[in-house]
Length: 419
Image (tube, rainbow, N blue to C red; front, side, top):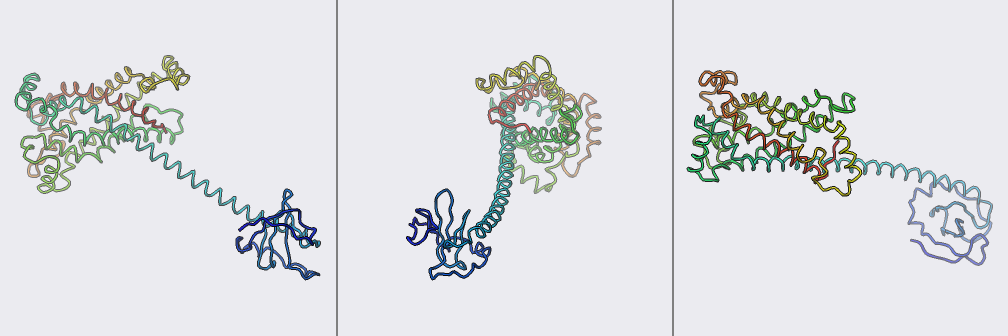
């Protein structure tokens, strides 16, 4: 505790005014640095003072039980000033160094925590951007998704317009959105993981190989790896959705009912039916989908028109809204997304057909992926592997376009940092 005091009348060692410091307020370790002083030649208690910027700090009491913080000392006017001044400097330097070391350590820890926290927040925003893109795009194209599943799962042979009329008549308008909620539950985390994994894998590969910019090979590898990652995590929900829209699926009682039915009748690993063809299809699908879009985007940004756009965006950053901050612009983002989705769907559609058929098989008559593919060809020829391709492309074109547009838009809105 500090108290303002006045100097004793009999001492010449103190400047006018001072601060009184109780000894118990300082650590006991300070006193260990003070050597015992020579015996005083007077009867007054030992008083230690310091002079710093014309103010005096006094510690009153015996040396053995008190300590001081000062720059220069005076011991009752004796000649101990220089000796104690030097030792006090050493003490202060020693403790100051310790404090600096602690402060540096705390600063490093704080910086590390801030970096980790920032990374976690950025990852969360990145995932939400992908999830929101999936929600919007899937809801928009749910009717086309329903038609595609009718061709693949139910084996419909009807004309497209006849099938549309039949669904509208039997189930009404809401029949075109049948299973959309489950589809969102599947695609939202799937797309979120896919988008985030692709950007992460691509950036990691670029840094590992020491390149300033991603190569086409790195883009395709990152796309394939992201597709595999998302498939491993999200396949069970996709299997449940397929079972629900299959004949008799209405009687299972929704997502929970379908889940319980599959676990009870076929075991937990029935949720991963079709895993091998899913991985085989998603690896090239992800490679083409993300690779093609990224290649088109990179080519535009490196063109004279793209460079002018980026330069203008930097100069007018404060005046641009979220749409105007899209690097490709709204129209080009939609177009490149549609092209990427179309290329991906056409290249991997046969794997999709085989995967859907595997998911519908029961344990007693289950076939492997190759045998299932052969059976499909035997029953309907090679065109059977492309059953429902036209409605699938009609679904993929707007879905991929909207998905990439919403994803890029949400990255701007949420201020997702590119790493």
